[in-house]
Image (tube, rainbow, N blue to C red):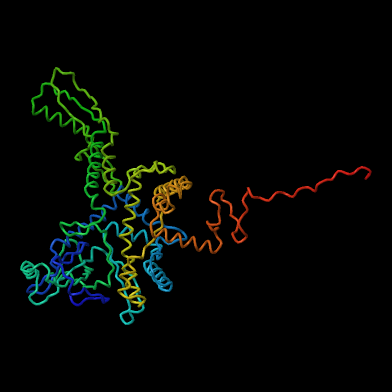
Length: 552
């Protein structure tokens, strides 16, 4: 292993020297494999670890070919990656990002470019499935070394069994792990700086299962690659005792093996017990024991002699030397018996019982966090109230959401590299932006949608019932926070949108609406409305004077 291959992006933000801690930095990705040094040079001291990981990956991939396991995996992948004719499976959401419109536009453009490099619209299902099965995903970010400002030129998939994430302690004179421990024990646990850790990847294209590699093993050559040149995304499931990154299939290893053994034993039992067998009682008379046995064998071979024609070779073949599972029983009978007799032994009963098979199938689905109801292909889909929705479906929806969050770290790493290479942002800017960039996957879980819709409907109905008591027993803020469950951010956002819509004339001003009648009130500029009791009387009819006599 020589120099590092690839590129590095320097981080300008350094930890101040006054920030110290007795706890060394840890890595939660299961990559605690250090590089040791010896007489023959440096080598990767991961005895058994690399072998175990390769064996686990091979086992995961073989498990994925099992029909029941493959069906469960397809349910998970289809739920996480929803393909649509018009929309992309994933979109970037920048509504929470406090940045200029120009920066947001460039971020969206670069994210679209990354999806194009991955061909994510067509290969999204395959990419997510490989990540779910292997428990890890590697991509090599290829750039133009002479022109890095052009950004990522290609994203190449790397087989997980040929890649390893290694952490190496940088040599600092006499500094070592033992020296660090001694200094830490002698200090006040506040003044020791732990040695720097160099992180890189080792790519072994010729790596075979069950072999270790290094300087002492010339058969396998590894290529050191920089950390920034490789996108590394794990499942987030780590065996903390062994320090191994696991796949979500790891919990189903035992249920799959149990199910396979039960099915094999069931097949053997049915094949051996299902056919009926015959019992031949052969009358041997007063023959001696040796001759009686010889006579019994002659009779048995006489009826068992099977000459068959082999159509492949054109030869006559004798099958009497081959044992059959439907083997009959031949028993001798002495003189005085009932003579030669043939009886039938019935086959096994209750061959249709598969309760144990169903149990282990459900156990397998529970291990994979898939609802058991999905095991039954003829089960209907309820579109009723949320009370009819199974709790397992809601749990399954949350599980898929957590996996989407974990899988999105791949997009974040690629997007970070692309933006930094093109000088769109700096490393300090990304530290702020990373927490406010979200990835919106297409959603297709109708169970969760029905649940959310019904909850929202009940909240709106409850708010309508509390409307007459607003200002008397409840405040408007109480209704928005306690009944509608709006957060501070949502209240501020909705207030701004409502104000803009009132100014634009999209909705009427609530101040001009009579809360009792819901009708628009009179404009105050036109004068105060006259009270109903003080309304002016209607004009009187002119007084009619009776005519005087003689006027007619």
